Length: 107
Image 1 (cartoon, rainbow, N blue to C red):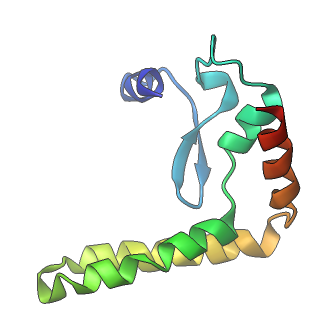
Image 2 (image 1 turned 90 degrees about the horizontal axis):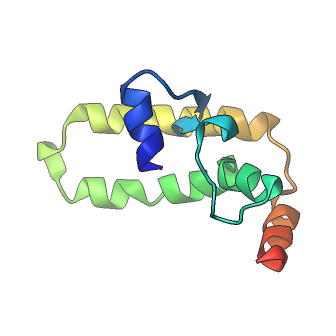
């Protein structure tokens, strides 16, 4: 992953846009020696909007601890994240559980 980050900074590695930001493309990651199958890598680089919405729901409790000191831009980013995740959830396939079981069984 660090190699990908450096290569992104140098303009050499590709990324794809997701609801949570830019992620590596499969072709841009060097996974030699990790023993990952193509299916494993696809699952690792997938974004399950419903799971991320659950995680994003935990953020406000921490933000509120900072009160007025928290920059408004962070709240705006959180709201935008929720909107992107909701949009993605409306079009995403719902059968991620079978993917997780398959990867766990192959490990």
